[in-house]
Image: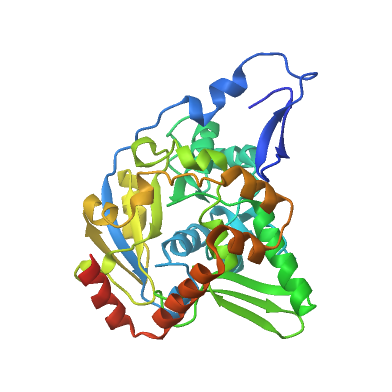
Length: 371
């Protein structure tokens, strides 16, 4: 929004991109403040809620949960549209926003990436919106709020803003350290990465990294060093997120449907998405997705096991110290051992190793009893 280009995104000492002002260019017009999503309210009201999963098992296994994001992206491109989303860089050393226009691009778009990407090109988004072509923009709720501001209004019927249910975003340096450690260990460059690989089914989430020398790294995601750190240490603003359900700017909110096993016909062992549509336009789009199962549910069905939609995570006591250590590229193993202790890490890895061996039906019964 700045006409003088006085603001640039710089990495701060915590390892996060932060708007930095060039005082020699700034004319104190106040447009940056007035354009900032944190200065505005949106207050969209949920219109309809659904469970969703792809019928094609092959496609479903490649998605993080039920595949609704890739289904929307594929339909948008099939209709001659444009998709904005996050993918790995060509060398897998970073995570970035890209503009996609071909079916092949959707494959790069699939899956979760647990790190902060560089911001998208919002000016190009506005150009595409004005072109009249269909546009699907995927991002975290804060990215969506910024996109809503850039679009100025809700009059772009050709644009669908899709937010991802978010607990918080980890530092890009954390991901870079993870890749650097693996490339040093395997003495090879990364050829493929998947942070939510379904080795068996949706209950067992793994990190999988393939290397150009043919070697492969596979580890249970939730108990891995990257998984633990990326789900604990977020961008500072994530601990007081202003874009939860009560102040949503998106047309559609999507994520894992934890708790789908409690609802008749909603659970798929290979992944189920929870979907909240905020208007008739987005509900119609969801109903027109082919080769999938869409079941209407209540908002409470989604909220009772997806608390991150409404509430921010609590900041860890040692947040500042560990965030700085992450940004300095310290060993992920040492960070985890110092923060949680070796015994806890061992027990956690054992727990998830046992869980990965249990049949889906047993896990579902345990969850029902626990609930």
